[in-house]
Every structure is written in C-alpha cells, then in structure tokens.
Image 1: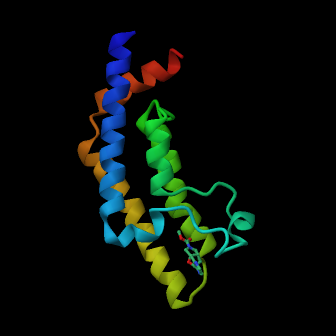
Image 2: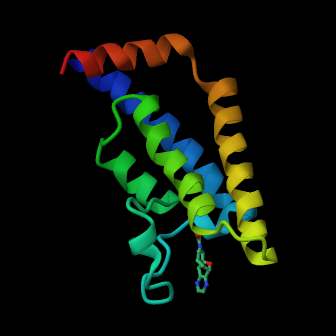
Length: 130
Ligand SMILES: COC(=O)N1C[C@@H]2C[C@@H]3O[C@]2(Cc2nccnc23)C1
C-alpha cells in the first residue's frame, strides 16, 4: 500500500546517495563503469556476473532492490570480481586489489554508520510479503 511505497522510495534515496558518493571517490574510478569487453575480451570468461557502480545506480532506479541486503550482494560483486580478476603480484593487480578492499571497507562502514536497523527490518517485512 502507500506506506510500503514510501518505504521503498526512502530505500532508493538511501542507496542512490551511497552509490553516488562511492562514484565520486577517485579511489574507485575503475569501478564506476563496466569493464570494457573490447579492451579486456577475456573478462566475461573469468567473471560470471560483472558489476559496477553505474549498473548499481540503474538497478536502484529500476526498483531492483527491496532491501539493503540485496543491494549489498550486488555491491560486494564489484570488489569480489576485482580480487578474482586481478590476483597477480604485479603492481597493477596489487593496486586495484587495494582499491577493491578499500571499497569493501567503505561500503560496510557507511552501512554500519548510516543504516537504521529498524528501517532494514521494515524492508525485509515488505520483501517477505511479496
Ligand atoms: C574493475 O576493473 C578491473 O577489474 N579491471 C581489469 C582490467 C585489466 C586491466 O585493468 C582493467 C581494465 C583494463 N583495460 C585495458 C587493459 N588492461 C586493463 C580494469
């Protein structure tokens, strides 16, 4: 009903705000757009589910996420994929892995500091009711 739509609108605003802040952080430039398949043809052979911050934003706009938990699963793909695709000891791989871990820690810190547990519980109730 209307109250549920109000909750889901607030969830989209919360998730959009987080995603836009991450996209503005220069450390996370490599994560802002999908990896270019022309430039990196083997990427989709290695990474089954590519994810990036611009795709997260599109998913939010399309109301794909009914809970913060569902958003976190896709957001976590971004840094997990980077660790998986860039495992080597060369400086380039190490560099993007440091940024992947920084992304992981930043997402968790924002959620811990800014997500009201009661609000997430209301979102879970809506998910279960659908
Ligand atoms: C999230 O970003 C990544 O996982 N990557 C891996 C790719 C390998 C390397 O860096 C990336 C883009 C790229 N393009 C051209 C040549 N080499 C590269 C970004």
